Length: 352
Image (tube, rainbow, N blue to C red; front, top):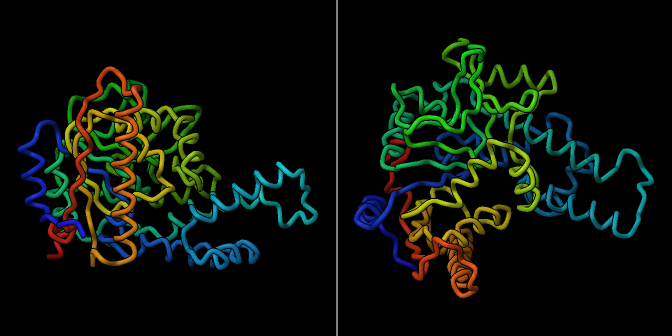
């Protein structure tokens, strides 16, 4: 059983070591702010919105409410059907159609279950989150929600840049992706976000301060017009990576993660196989020396045991990279250090 550091001790350790200190936020970060962000709630929202019974049976068959797992199974079934040259006999039960429908339902369920305004989380809790983020030089997130955007409204000027701004001809109702940006530390939405969209090949960010319209209201208006947010909802990590590579913004953010140095904290991230593209990027980035993995609850729980095993595999993958002879010009000879800390001691949402 690995030892757990406090967040303060882990941060002091990282700051004394060489290089910047960054953080990668997973779904546990959002759930800590508001229970509506749990996958189970999204699933119930999707069923109420009219998810077909035969698709509901897939969730029940695999004993999950995780959309990504069912999307992965549908993707595998789609491939197998094509491999064996099987043709659908029932137009209401087409694997490819269900796969695409479920992706759209996921986005719609996220928007339907998302709190409409920051008051649902609370200003004091957002302030606590702001203080937590200030400890890091950059922030990466795989969440789709608006929590980081809302946090940015708590204090002006916000310490972080997100890569979006306005050019001379940009309308006041949105910002556009400007990769040059400022020299300030950045926030990167690795899997997109509800307030990001693509119009005519241009990645845009919905804004509240110049429109006076809450972001979730804008998102729902876009959904009704069949304009969907830029989010990565595909099931397998290969599907996610393909989606990332197809977007100028997402690929830019992913490249940044692949080239970070120093230390990386994780918070609320299970290191699951669905995010193998991220694990692969971390393993191959030999300029990244240390990973501090956040542990929630009983270290002996099944979920945490799986987390420890995933971390061990990550170290093994780094070892394989170092011994492959293909580590690149910035390669180092050192191994990847993995440390663990108790996320309750980070007091991200000021609940302690």
